[in-house]
Image (cartoon, rainbow, N blue to C red; front, top):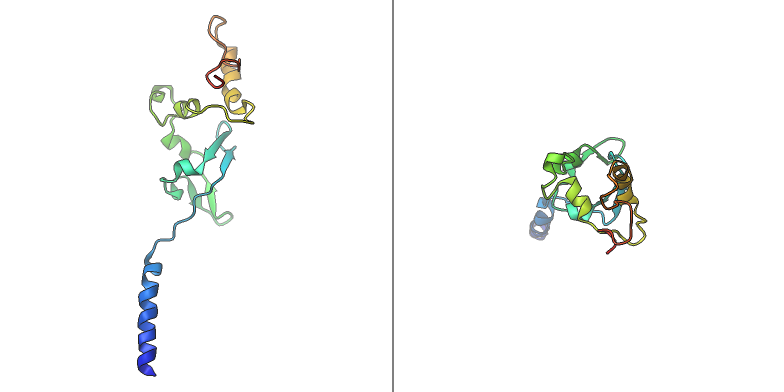
Length: 136
């Protein structure tokens, strides 16, 4: 009886070791979330950021399991004009996307209406949707 119990304990320990030694990874949310904590409302796709550790953007908080820290976006995605040519610059990420069905131009117009007011009349319109960069 003692031998059987010892063998059972050894088998249980052997089976449990790989499971216990694995690091628990949190599943990446599938949703594309609106983010209003940023200076301008944007949508955030967790799947595009799956290679980034959760704690790069979130921190543990007693009130909420994982709270978002909005200033973290700018640490990877610069909004400075001098960084405009960088692949991960905010400007290039926003302009690299095409309008989505049902978007109604909200994402584009949040900046383009303000820019259009200061734009000279001889330059192409930033707010005209027909034949624009978004709707070809």
